[in-house]
Amino acid sequence: MNIFIVGGGGREHAIAWKVAQSDRVTGILAAPGSDAIAQLDKCEVVNISVDDHDELLQAAKDFQADLVIVGPEAPLVAGFTDMCEHAGLRVFGPSKQAAQLEGSKQFAKDIMQKYDIPTARYGTFTDLEAAKAYVTEQGAPIVVKADGLAAGKGVVVAETVAEAHEAIEMMMSSRAFGDAGESVVIEECLIGEELSFMAFVHGELVIPMVTAQDHKRAFDRDQGPNTGGMGAYSPVPQFNDALLKEAEKRVLRPMATAMVKEGMPFTGILYAGLMMTNEGPKVIEFNTRFGDPEAQVVLPRLVTDLVDIMEAIMDGHEIPIVWRDEVCVGVVLASEGYPGSYEKGVEFTIPNLTKVGQQWFHAGTRFKEDATWTNAGGRVLLLSTLGTSFEGALEDTYEILMTREWPGLFYRKDIGHKLLEFRDR
Image (cartoon, rainbow, N blue to C red):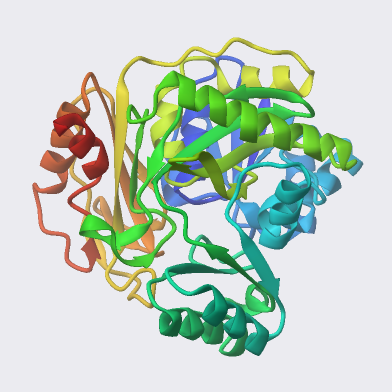
């Protein structure tokens, strides 16, 4: 098989790495890919932007792709899978209609309300003053979200009414996230612990994956602004099988059924970002693709051939999936200043890995001569480690990261702190 992968970040590096392990796959072409993806077995890259859908489609045709896998959200929301299907290409990902679950927070909230899927109370606003008035009435803490896509950064958890008003101004007046902030969703602030719960979905066929927990805040002890994710681990032992079954029963399966009933059946990765509250699981957000960095700690635990899974589920077959018993942790190296402005072109070298079960996943890098790399994005690298225990996997990860200084880059030194606190109780 020839596999065409859309995207070039850390998530797509992990997908390409996993797909390359399939005995059925002879060639992989990633667009735009990355220098790191180009170094993987069976992989080539072509420099086409994820926004250039006509060129992407032509490249997939020329490559005679047997399967197209769309990594990032933007081409999904723009309808690239519809283009592929219209051209007779097999593609794993939701239609433009179904991708609205991620493309519009209001759309997702309205579906959840209609089908009684548990989520935070909310209001949606296109008028700045009305949004501010709602915040004043509700009080703080409160959550302000840009309605559209904002690369995981369009969410502000405001501790005060003034902070919430400032966030509304930033999104709606200053347009910090462009058109994504034309409308805002304002929610009650849910209390609990977060859980990333993904599933392979085709219509009403739902096959849950192992769980993960992301770390959204930029700095240690969950301080600083929200980012696209600074690290993750899998599984999440704080939540037992009964709670996960409840989340599957009350969130994942009802949403898959809801989309069928709405006439826009979902195919692809359904990602539920959950807050596990005292009242049970409640949805923070839905995504319509692999999480990033969750993919980088979930896919290393996957034993079953990823291509087999995608093909079987698109054929409507419930394939049994085997996962490794080992845990996996991942720590992100990001550019200083992220998620705000940062300098590009900072040089660094990457330590060699000697332990089995460790892997560098590249999110934003460029390769230079003499094994030197430079940063080319906000999130730069993720070091993923499989281990028999969380403590051991974390120790092995940080041991590598601490072998050198990383000028121009930074990383959180407390990934997994909630897990370790849970273990210490």
